[in-house]
Image (cartoon, rainbow over all chains, first blue to last red):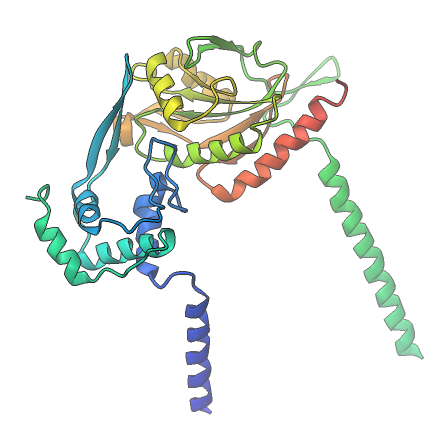
Length: 132
Length: 214
């Protein structure tokens, strides 16, 4: 009897996970809470005001890591005005969280997806100029 | 025999309630949109809540007033260009509405800045250009700050200066639907994308109602 219940639980857990669209559940959670406000839930961004994360090209992961952890600021200017586009720095994300966010974004928005490992992320974090 | 009679009775009632349900739902979807806000009675006639008269400069330095908009139904939101919090999300929903009514000349979109000191006409123009929208369809409006806070109240939107809030202003992300007479007829929470399709349907409903006699 207990064996049957055990298998039923395992089976429903498997079913539940296979129905999830993304294998990066933590990444999705973090993306929705920290990134989707500007980049939007579907990664489209907002015109030229917020860059889109969707692309056919593979992402430059090392620069992504630096931008997420160090932030980014630039200006769009016309003859008589300017707008500041600013992405805040998310300094407190661990390499695991960074890997999950980046893998979630790539998996969801880029067909050329290739999984990034936590080890790679650690290397990129160490290489970032704007963190020093 | 007795069982069969009960069964028939049951099916009969189920059928009746089904028809009533369908009919009831159909009726309510044909109904006019409600008038939102406080209603008063003057000489036995209802007087509905109305947006006060206003006049603002848009991104092309053209005066836009309630009078300009009397032949249009419009949706409005309050924002500021340097807003780091909910604005991009609400703007995205505004662009969805914009896309849905791109070819419908009787619908306009209004975005009032609550930070007019920084958001002057050139900056609003730059913002609109970079959003990539038609300037004749979607107005980005700048005017006097205190008046805008009060006007926001008429739209049932909270807008105020708050040094503690991200970007220095606190405001709610509602998108408000207004009819040709300046009455508020529907709204959605711009931070909740799932509400936008309903608001789009409400705009269609209001169009049918507002231009029925034209």
